[in-house]
Length: 310
Image (cartoon, rainbow, N blue to C red; front, side, top):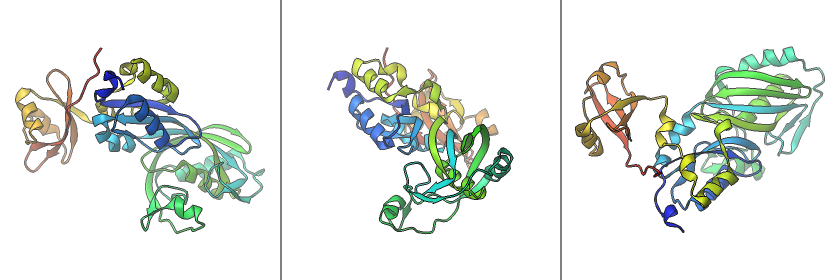
């Protein structure tokens, strides 16, 4: 391993996941190529899916929850007329129905029920646990269990194309939403059955598909040393939070885990508000949380980042 790879890398790679491999396959390949020990992904994509998967390295792994929790945009192709056990094209067909009577007006009307704060039943083939076992393990063993609907949010759905029996749509949603369940539920609502034929994630938080690297390109960058231009600072994942700039005295207090006052910033703060804190020279320092009762900011996660050189 080169000296370049021995140093810790703190940042996020925006990867375009290829078809047919798991999210953990992407993590393993980046880990090998980068020589880093701490590597994780910011949001699982099924093997059938392609598109944006943020890969966190070093101290950026401490912000994976923020990456996962950001809004996401997907482009899905739903095929009507057949439902599958996995709700996607990789599964076994469980029923076939005639979809020839489905119209564009029917689809537009049905989609209104899937926008906003809704309840969604997750698929059996998912990584959720029941009794300590993954649902997909139970499903593969032929066991189906009742799944409770979960609250999810869909900010918007845009219909891109309708070429019967294929529907292409873009969905902007929050954390925990299953596109496969949408395909299945939409097919049931229309009375014709349906499954997800293809899926691409166009956006995950601050990361978009048009600026993503292919996995091969990312591996090549670690090999030739040009990875620095591809690494995003960890705080990119926190763009929805307000920023505070602190002087040396407050910087030392934060690094020592001590609460502090921040003048005008406190007057605007909401109870429990979380902010990004930066040093006077612009380096990302920490996330801090406001205690309204004490009128103090408390360090949440404190970072000592390695910044890429040249």
